[in-house]
Image (cartoon, rainbow, N blue to C red; front, side):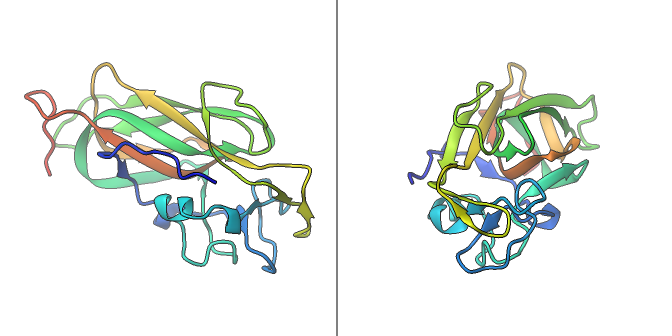
Length: 200
């Protein structure tokens, strides 16, 4: 599968501390939760170089948590960034998902949170339901019990939000919806200028 293009200046958020679900499976490995809690999983071996792009575990598919099933986690960025946009890669389970991420400024900036709408199709959808695009596609699915099923092609979807007024963001609060599985988040910095200064 092709590695999707990511803007050169995009900053990937480290999701490692927040991963709580294993949705990828390697050949011969013991099935874990899968996307849907029943073990239906994406073939880890087919992710290829995209696994590195997403910052996934080196032992992907062997039971380690690889995505965030959203339960209101707060992602602390460690600094305040001024953003022109945000890209989220993941999928819904049990149907499509449409949720809001809250981008909150740090105490040095103040002000209200900015909402970023994330809309992702189901991991077994063959076509996007929203304006999301296919980020990666498997040629088969690991079904319940770890059985390969060639009649289904699991997908990861990419949802993009862009801001007319660049917000300041020091942390991101995820929604409470465990059917929303986030595999990767990239932040797109706003061009430097008088109104777009970070505290790097």
